[in-house]
Image (tube, rainbow, N blue to C red; front, side, top):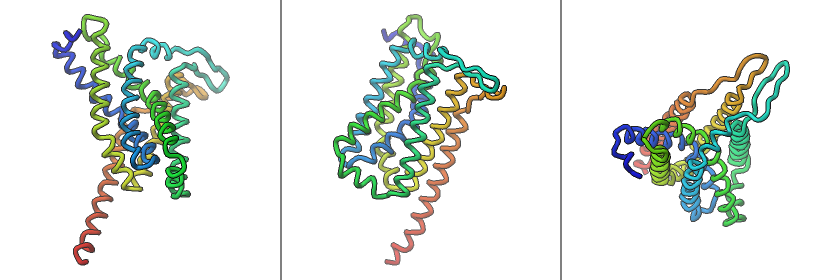
Length: 269
């Protein structure tokens, strides 16, 4: 069963796939951090770890059902008119409604944090355990949406590796498990950092708006949507990740500068 691990090509594929799973999981960690921070402090780490564990189980189950996921690419309904054309598929619908959910969730969270800053405190004191179950449901739901891309990417990368049908599946499962474990190690520190810096919370929610828009555009691209004869193109994920990385870099500089300004005053006191 594990003979495939004796192949150098398999190890290269495993390391690359694990790295990609971690990169593709960044948006997942941001969403989990935002949701978990709305819970009472004692439940935040539990929600984060439980959400990631359920995400790992869900992804492994989806890997066994990968033929079903690939089948979701096939259109089952077509829209044709003088100005619009698209082939609706199951995968496109999942990405479209997932993108809408992220846009709604992120916008409502920004509204609550800016217009109703006391909302989170009231919600924590009023809901408690109910909020934990609600948070887990939201985490599992959004992970299912994010899993579609990462699993199909994994299938493409491991295609043709190994002599047995189960070799590629074994590599994908190992990569998913390793990536989730690494995310569990860093997820809580990231959550605490976002919680400690209000500007990072707004920035993280802005990232989710970008990701939601990207999911909607990707759904249109998978549907080969054409508006007035112009086909909707794919948005390269590299552009999105560069924007996120650059924004984080600028915000880290702002935080560092703010700390440097506060230090002289502390010394005088």
